[in-house]
Length: 229
Ligand SMILES: CC(=O)N[C@H](C=O)[C@@H](O)[C@H](O)[C@H](O)COP(=O)(O)O
Image (cartoon, rainbow, N blue to C red; front, side):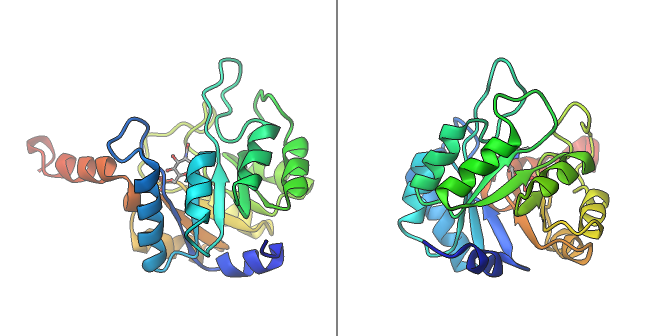
């Protein structure tokens, strides 16, 4: 197992590629996720973000870069989707994730953030708090989470937005507060990734713009549709 300080050094200033197919997509297959992960590493990704225990196990078997593991669940009694349960954390750690990300929003949740963080420690993994707001981030950082992601800004009732842009203001605010910020969410161009780093991000995660063909195709078809020309 890699030392946590080594893992943090490996991802500092780098590009994390999120290799998550859309559910039900033709790309929603472990062998395709593995191929995306290998291609991203070939392109220079410093780490990968992967959903699902089986996918994490398959990817960690063939890459040497750290994997950020998550499990997504649609719960009936909570809006929290990303790694909601202690068992998810333990399973992701067992599958080889070096970093485990979990929803750290201050919403109704099945498990407290401090217990999820404790499970990351038990698994020997770095803890990444997926946040939507400054309040989420301050709370997660003060608990001792190692990385603070802007992942959920725009995706909670409180932060819902029509904007296609990353939340640069949140990235900048959290960096100023001294958090180790993973800029994540709607980063679609190299220029936006660079701007996120200039706002003080520790590293940048890009998903859809690299690994979701359906989304990328829609952006282009939308742009050339008659109504938009
Ligand atoms: C909100 C939520 O559930 N985000 C998920 C978190 O893992 C993924 O669906 C995103 O693709 C990922 O955060 C990367 O973001 P983008 O695809 O915008 O580059």
